[in-house]
Length: 324
Image (cartoon, rainbow, N blue to C red; front, top):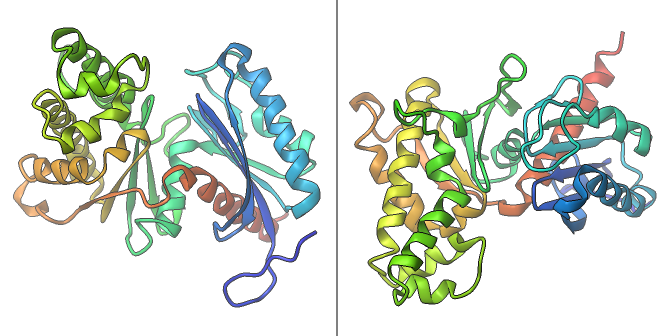
């Protein structure tokens, strides 16, 4: 086992964090204060479903556990889970996860206490303690990826509603027709809008950038906006308006000190952040003007693993101190 020291030079314990998403898997070793020491990253083979991901998890654990001798495992899963039991409620990305006792299985395979939570909750914890929200409380985090998720951290602890309720901002209704935030603010919804531009304006700057790259077209939006492409700028504006409307409800109900934008779409960067902040001024009541700051994720792809390490440490310590 390698000796791990914190910033003071004192030795400290290690933990394992696992991020299970629809496209990527990360298994990391690190400290309970969120410092990542080593990462095993895998691309998810969707055709193999949950079984393929389980094999990859075991591969990562076999590399990290003997080396770092961790005390516990923290998992951020991309979907609704029962955080008290570690059982997945439903899978929207891969076959084979629904009703799977993930926490129990992983504890058996690793020989370690295992704690499971929704990935947006875990990322929110990481950002609240080690990222953009480190000086703020409460902290609300929204992940803009293949779907849209949210997490709320109050006094350095994840807020949980009654199971299976969490901060599911992606499923807020946007109109009486039944459209939800994910229909307007997810990566796939932006991809669809860009495909429409390509069909209607194949010579636009955005269309030329995308070329024959099918899937994930949204990653080209930032560059096209930077060039003031008249076809790209309205897409960004529409995205910011829809996201600001959703976040205005968060502000009116929860009053977070900061809202952090994470996930793939947040890589659009400052143009998205600034546009959302400006749109919010039109959508919240006068008393709440300038009370909540919009920020970009500092941890980016490390948000879930960082939060997973912290969560594992928090729960491990809590349960150790409260044994009957």
